[in-house]
Image (tube, rainbow, N blue to C red; front, side, top):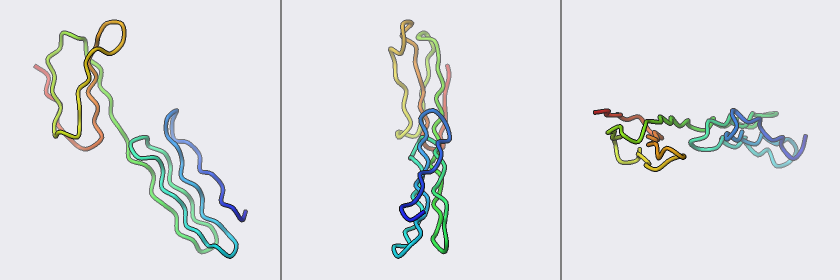
Amino acid sequence: MSDGSPGGAAGPCGTGGRGGMNGGTGANGVAGTTNRGGGGGASFCGTTGAAGGSGVVLVRFPSTACISASPGTNSVTSCVGPANDKVATFTVSGTLTVN
């Protein structure tokens, strides 16, 4: 294929990277979507493949739970859903504290 083939999705929100291109361009594969776990683009005929997207971890708690997430790039969101639950989101390695 001369225009590169799209990669497959790793999950309902993950987007796979575009595959490498053949022909005069020789373009490399494209990385998967960041924090969505999408697969990386494949190599093709002398091009270079790309890495898959990093993952994300979501942990849901009742609204009464006392939780914190660190470092600061990870977060806790309140008022989620009809019960106003809390959700801790981790995009980097970190610590979840539950009191």
